Amino acid sequence: MAGKKESTFINMVLVLFIVTLVASAALGGLYELTKEPIAAAKLAKKLKAIKEVVPEFDNNPSEEMYSVEMPTGDLLEFYPAKKGDELVGTAVKTFTTNGFSGYIWIMVGFKPDGTINNYSVLEHKETPGLGTKMEPWFKTTDPAKAKCSILGKNPGTANLTVSKDGGDIDAITAATISSRAFLDAVQTAYNEYNKQMEGGTK
Amino acid sequence: MTNKDIFLRGFFKENAVFALLLGMCPTLGVTSSATNGLGMGLATTFVLIMSNLVISLVSSFIPDKVKIPSFIVIIASFVTMVDLLMAGYVPALHEQLGVFIPLIVVNCVVLGRAEAFASKNKMVPSIIDGVSMGLGFAMALTMLGAIREFFGSGKMFGVTLFNETYGMLVFVLAPGAFIALGYLIAFINRVRKV
Image (cartoon, rainbow over all chains, first blue to last red; front, side):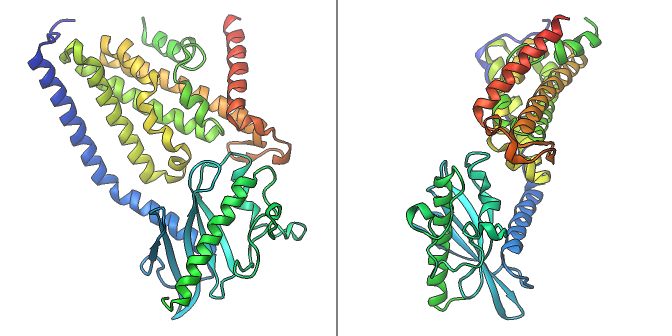
């Protein structure tokens, strides 16, 4: 091709420098532009999850968030939901490393007395079609499957492990590992939640 | 070669998935549903068009020995842009496609077209090549996604067609991707011969 640059050292350095400079400038600019929408999208998702798992509230739980560091170095986040001045529930962002593949992040909502109000699965990498059923499975309202549901149960009094391990909960068919991991995350959340409530910090 | 020829070649005759068998990693990885396939296909199409456009313009200034690194930087920039834009404006889809978006960088279709076509041709044919290759890729991924979604969970683009209990789980999992792709390629090859 006419005008093709020779592969001399100075040409190569110059061309690579210009290419990377333009690329990084463009990306830096776009990063600034998309920073706000990305943060807003993340916040909206979190708020939606909180709304789903605790009773109606009128404060801003994200502002009153507090967290506890777990041995793995990850944070357990607590979102107190209040109506007026009264605590109506706490959403706990919890996790487990016992999943079939990688972390499972769950938002679970406790009523002030420690019973589970609702939960929402935030992030997981479980097998599609098996472990992924944990989103509907543990909150079924079908009376025939009452042993699957964790809603309205209190991890302090009920034994939240799968029935195979002698617990009170029926595991997801063909996904016992995911079920164990899910319940483990709920239990972790409850234990920390309990510590917080007993410590008197609200 | 006319522009129409370039388009038809990229879209069907040398379809990235069915004929060239390029970009198999995203093809098999994300196509568990038609929506995912379409989203991934369109994201790749955008990257292909933009990188073909830029590379056709700048390739004469780039010395041969640093051609590949320069192309990769250009492609990676556009991929990062897609990643940021999707995270900001379509977070749900972005979450579904997850790690496969950054991996468009190493999708051999993109670098392949940059090297084999855009660096040797002018701007307009390069854009057409990007559009056709990209849309061909998107079509293949959507077809594969639709087949897997239909047999696996009884849905099509998220709309339930029959009860999920009758779905064949294997189609949602990785082996189903290989099986569906194999039959799809066989079918397309038969059609091509007619």
